[in-house]
Image (tube, rainbow, N blue to C red):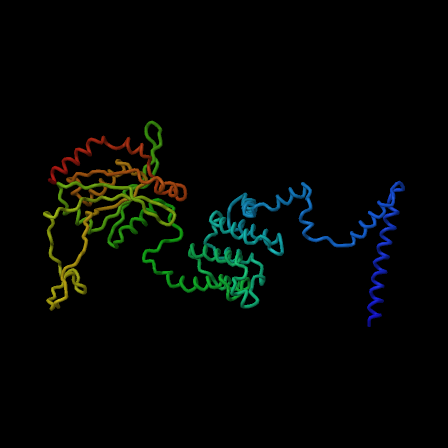
Length: 452
C-alpha cells in the first residue's frame, strides 16, 4: 500500500514539473532576445500563477468603463417613474380602460419572468382613478394576473410560518385593500388567482376571506344609499339633494327658476341661475303660526357632500321661541290609533326608582324651508322668498334678514372642477350686491330692544 501511494505522489510531481517546464519554454519563446535570465524566471512564475482561479471578491474591485456604468445607471433608475411613463405613453390619445389594459399587456409581454412586477402593480394602482377603472373588478383581476404563478407558494410549514415572500404578499393585500375602499366585492376568479400565486394559507387569501365575510353583511345597511353616478343636471342634483336633507315623504320640491341665458337691450349676456326649494306641510303650518313681529332669517351657504361632489343649500329659519310665548298643545289622540302619542299609566314605583331624567334639551329654532341655487346673492334669494309667499302669505308681514357668508374656500375647488355644480360667487361680488351694513345692524338693534 505504501508503494502505491509513493508511486501516485511521484506521478503527480512529474505532471506538475512538466507543466512548469512547458510554461517556462513558452515564456522563453515570447521573450525578446535582449532579455536576461531573471526575466525568464519571472515569466515562468507568472505563467504558473495563471493556472489558479481568482476569487469572486477580486472581480468586484475591478473598475468598470464609464460608458457601461452610464448605461447601468439608466437601467437602474426608479421603476415607478418608468412605469408611470409607460401608462402615459399608452394614454396619449385618451385615458380609458382599453389603454390601461394595453399598458398591462405590454408589461406582461416584455419579460417572461415578470421582473419588476411589484413596482408595476403599485404604479398601476395609483393610475387607476385617472383612467376611470378604479371600480372595475376585471381590471383588478388582470393586475393580480401579473404575478408569476406557483413561484411564491410555500413548500413547507416553515416557509408558511415565516411569511414566504412578504413583499409580494403585501402588494397583493394592497390590491385587495383598494378594492375594499371602492366597495368592490371579489369573485371566484380572484380567489383562483390568489391560490395559484400564493397558496391557500397566505395573507392575501385571508384578506379575501374577510372581504367575502363582511361585504355581504354591510352591503345594504345604509338606509340612505347614494347612486354611483350622480345626476349631471344641476336642477336634478338639487332636487335629489333637497329630498335627502328633508327626509320627509310629504315634502314638496318646487323649481322656482330654471337656468337660462338672456340678452339685454345693450347686448350683454345674462345667465339666470336655477332656484330649487323644498317645504313640507308641517313646515308650512309652523310658518303660519309664527309671530309676525319676530323676523325670519335666510342663512347659508351650508355644504353637503355627495361622494366627491359638494353642493350648497340655504335655509329659512327663525330664532327659538321664548319660554313665555310657548304654548303646549294637547296631543290629538285620533292622529295615531296604533301608536298613541301620550300614555297616562299609574304604575307603582319602588323606593329606588327615580322619576327625574337628565336630558339636555337644546332648541335651535324652527326651519321653515330650504333651497339650492347656483348664485347665493341676495337678489337671487329674494326671488326664492317671493316664490314662497304664494303658499305662505305670512312672509309678506314678517321682516326677512339675510345672514350670508362666502363659504369655506377649500370646498369650492373639488366641486367646481369635478362636477361643475355648487358654484359660489366671489366674496367681492356679494359685498357689492348686499345692502349697506348699517341697515342690518339697525334691524338687529331694534329686534334686541323688542325682545328686552
